[in-house]
Image (cartoon, rainbow, N blue to C red):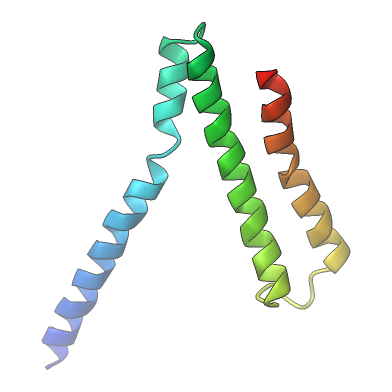
Length: 99
């Protein structure tokens, strides 16, 4: 019985690892695309768009953690708000670079 539970847990963890691997591969493609076709405007747009989405998703996760009170209560709310505003600078910077 214990071995069956262990096998099931291992299978679940392997499945989660495969899913996470797909999420991590979102950044290398635009980087290689930009390095190979750096002079092309579409390569820059894909690269900066990817960075913007990553920055926005990070900001969304931090905001969600604050709203649902998942963050440590000992953390200062002003400090978390400061971190969120700093993570928003990446998408703004990317938009400014594309113009």
